[in-house]
Image (cartoon, rainbow, N blue to C red):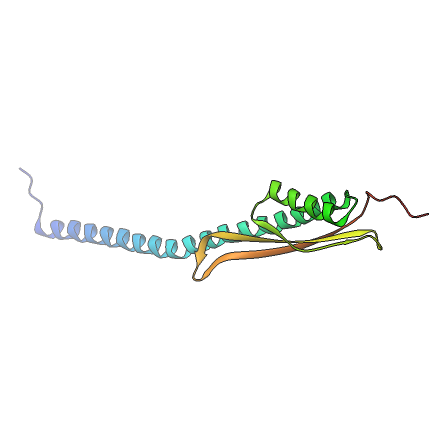
Length: 143
């Protein structure tokens, strides 16, 4: 029967302790890395939602201005702009509307309020505004 010498048993035990220490240190480093990476990833989600919302509000303003520019009167133009917004995004609202027959232009400013998917402190919503100007195409040209 083979019996390990006392000196060899100690060496194996030390190498096992060193091995476990290295794995414990790696686990702590991974956890510390996650503490940095996870908040950055969540922040990236918020930034991507804000970028998409910014593009959306610009598109909504253009659509509302185009819809209003195809109408013959101020009331019809405002109603057409509101309908265009309701069909696209119920969260958007008209902040400013100007149907100017003298200049032949309609100006629409849209406001969009977005709830952020990952709130940071008291920062839970973001508000975006965009404006668009379109020529009025429903009126005949002056003589």
